[in-house]
Image: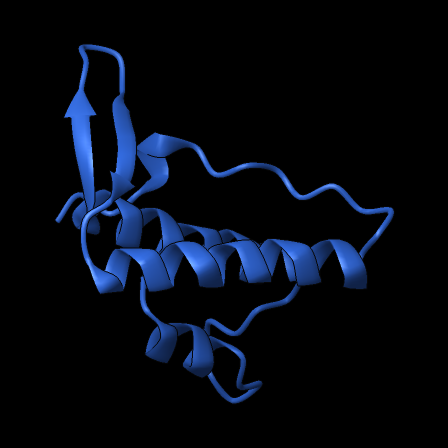
Length: 93
């Protein structure tokens, strides 16, 4: 998932446009998860991937933007709960 795909899906003319805020939130969280997965120092266990710390400017920028997004999401939808993304939903490449 990337920002250009998200931007396209925000357009009504796109056949796979977002129909609900949950769809947008899921894609944005997937983008941040993949950013962390491929740009953080990490450790793998049999059960899961453990992200330890940002190891580049890209990783740090992604972490900051993710935090900003989550704060704004709570501000815009204070009484709404958006399900957390499951790790197995993330891109594999």
